[in-house]
Length: 285
Length: 120
Image 1: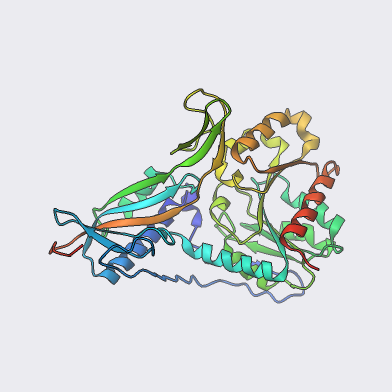
Image 2: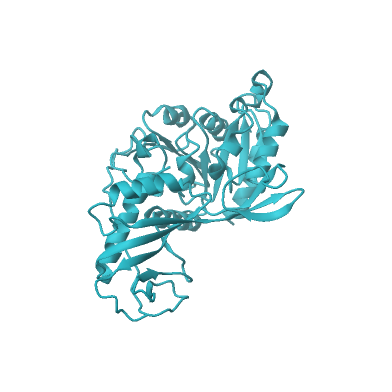
């Protein structure tokens, strides 16, 4: 699927900090850290999570580990980097939100309306991910909040390393909320923790009600699902009750916010959520 | 989803472990997969078998252990299932997904040893 979507092949992503800044064009080296923290034990200390062996009567030797930290993660490089990002955001009192949706669900429009309303009273910064172009960053920069565009080349999601590289080129003063606008894609971003405090999924009224049931990994565990483009619900024949039902099946704990960033309808609930998340997850005194 | 990349990472990991422990060849490999890992077991096995030749896992059987998720049905109550579904297998009613993991990890290996006298 998607030619293996280029995952793990992150050469060639670029960070564009915006005009007037230096333009590092970080072609990150693929740092394959094979840190294998396992040392074989010849007997079973079953709770320390290290590798140990058992020999069956026929002489077959099997090795495994369990307990402790559990089995050995297969794609753990991203997870380590994500935890590093999370620690950084927490230390700085920055609320990092990972915005995901299919392409064209209205992430950039929602961000524009959000920045116009709350920035600079609540300092915002944005990282936008796309395969190519700076169109989204160009749409957001006039508002004044720092915007970093990450062009991923062929990679269909942001990963934690791209985010940390982008964060390096952001001014960290006075940033209270970092919006990370992920690449439009409901599949791959689900597997890549960026170190965000919360994932927020947008579901446009024009997409139909069943998307959450079709793409459970991205919806499950999201802090909130924003049903966007509600001004188009009627012409699109969108059944909000059905959509709410589908969201509740996949992500029973999610808060559901209906809004139209274009008309402003429902935006107060969105700003209310941001206020609460700021107080809960990135308090400053 | 990323089955090729995952298989590559897995085979790398196996080669490293094999070197560290002085193993020769593997006959079986266990991988644990959560319902929300995005991994399709058939695709993972296909990719693994395609990439394994020339590595210590050549010819090894890849065994995928799915970690079940917790579901609830208004009529039938709460239970675990090993597949992702939103239709109750008992009453065809709607299911809620309460909990499922994104786990994707190497659970263990079976080693072919020339002298099979290693003490346990």
